[in-house]
Each structure stands twice: as structure tokens, then as C-alpha cells.
Length: 295
Image 1 (cartoon, one colour):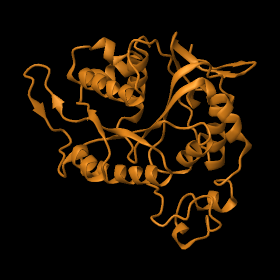
Image 2 (cartoon, rainbow, N blue to C red; image 1 turned 120 degrees about the horizontal axis):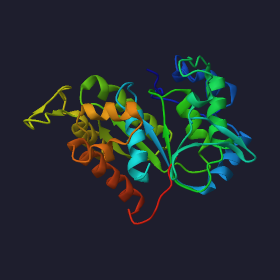
Image 3 (cartoon, one colour; image 1 turned 90 degrees about the horizontal axis):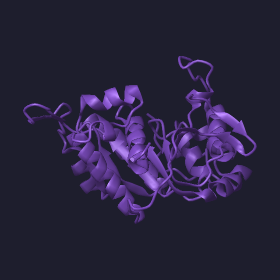
Image 4 (tube, rainbow, N blue to C red; image 1 turned 60 degrees about the vertical axis):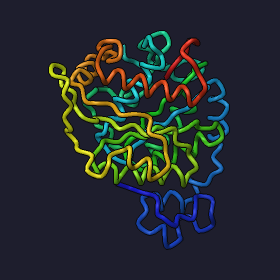
């Protein structure tokens, strides 16, 4: 997994890409080229495009396989509370695919000729697609833009932060699982956020135990041997938004393209999701009384 070096000179420094600390960094070539520092005219173009988006949230994790995409989908469903598959080109840009009147999705997967096609792109092409998604998609008037990111702290993350720098990112929600092998990478993600001055809304501990639907006893599938996300958040002084237990129905709902929150309303995981979503809304000072539109 890639990480930002401890003595990173910063993308705007004259030493960017050439300092000793830059050796071995996956972003060295990007910084040395000057592309990371800008100015990129797309930044102002994206700022103008994002004026109609009230809140912008990044979902991050240094670790892969911890449930970022699943959480992103349920966060969107929960915020929309209402929640073909083809992208259309309009006069004002690509149009998101709307699964409900107030819940839309934009994905590279929609642009592939087959859902089984692999996306084999080098950094510049990936960064170009990120720019297109932010600048050329007709987002319209929406309340939340939720960006589901890949694991790590690589070019994609730097690009998103750079392109949205003028438009203001409200913050990041960081996903982890309880075991130390995940927490090690998530600590690096938190460090990345601090170094690029990205606010942290909070951390979610996903797959946090399994509650038997019959006997209601809880088992620790991924034991928190070093205290889990709760201890990590205490040590690093970042908020813990909540813990989501495992529930087999989550995977089934995702496979069917349904909202787990509405399909299994009495699950302990649903209660956890709703509490976490409420805390995120509290972060923005918002309430359920207003109708919200989500991408």
C-alpha cells in the first residue's frame, strides 16, 4: 500500500518530487512534473460545477476489502431514504444514472462495453477520468456527493483532493475493520488526511462482530486484538462514528441492488447504520425534515 512519506515537502514546494523523502513515493513522478502543484485550469472549472453540490464526502480507507463501497451505497441510501444502467450525454455533460428520483450513481463501470471488462489504466488516465467525473458530469442541484475511493493513499486520492480544493471538501469518512492488520493501514490514511488538510468526519468500524439472528449472542469474527477502531480513535483523537456488525443480509441486498436499510429494518446492523448516518448529518447540522438529493 502506498503512503505519503513522513517528511513530504508538499506538492507546492520547489523540492516536490526531488527531496530525499520523495524517494520511493508512488507519487514522486507526479510531484516532480509539477502536475500535483498546479495550477490546473480544471480546478476552477470544477469549483464552478460544484456550486450546486451542498456537501462533498470522501469515503476512504488505507485497507482494501473493508467495505468502503458497501458503506458508500448504504450511506447514500440512508441519506436519500427513498433510494438501464446507462450513462447519457446531455448538452451540459454526462448524466448520472438515477436509481430513484433523488439518488443517482456515476461509475466507470457504466462506461465499459461489458461488465466483465477489466479497467487497466495507468495513473494519468485514471486521473483524467477523475477530472471528467468532477467537471463533465451534470450533477445538478444535489445535497450530497459521496465519492467512493480505492484503498491506499495514491495518485487517485491526491487528484481528488487537488481537483476539489477550490470547491471545498466537507470531510472524509474512514472505514476500517477491527483487526490490527486493517488498523495499521487506516492509521496511514488518517495521517494522509492530516497532511493534505482533509477534515475527518469520523471512523466507522465495519464487520464489527456477528450477532446471531436466533440466539442474539455476539461473536468476534475479526477480533480487535489491539482495541479496534475505538482505541485507535482515542489514540489519534479522531471521532468514532460507530460500529456496524456483520449481517449476511447486507451482501444479499447488495447483490439484488436493494437498500438493506429498508429491506431488513430490524437488523442490529441497520440500527448501527442509522446511528452513524445521524451522526454524519449532525456533523453538517442537518435534519431529516428536509428532502435531500444524493449522488
